[in-house]
Amino acid sequence: MRLLAIRLVWRLLALLCLALGFIGIFVPGLPTVPFLLAAAWAAGRGWPALEAWLLNHPRWGTSIRNWREHGAMPRRAKWASSGMMAASALLMGFSGAPLWATLGVAGVMLVVAMWLWRRPES
Image 1 (cartoon, rainbow, N blue to C red):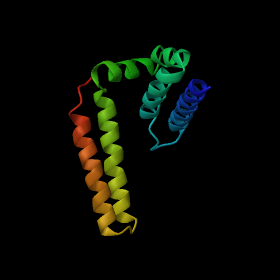
Image 2 (tube, one colour):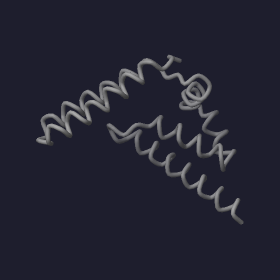
Image 3 (cartoon, one colour):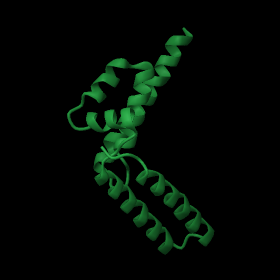
């Protein structure tokens, strides 16, 4: 019974991430691939058929496999992510948010961008 409950939790997490990834296709600023990576990860723990479907998907499968095998991401994705983070920091700067919050968020995004650009390219 406990094993069934754990498998159900993994499946629900995989479905949630898959749904968020799908929404990210249409909503600017909501990433798609990170949610698909998380969906494949969760599916690998509780839903092997969904994991196989994601890994063999014609559009997203290559990105998921490259991330799993090499921690790699395409340069285009790095540029897009960096651009979105820069635009978000700029928007936050003009939003009237407290200076400490703006600088803190910008600092976190800068660290993420530095980590991102150190990843291998597919």
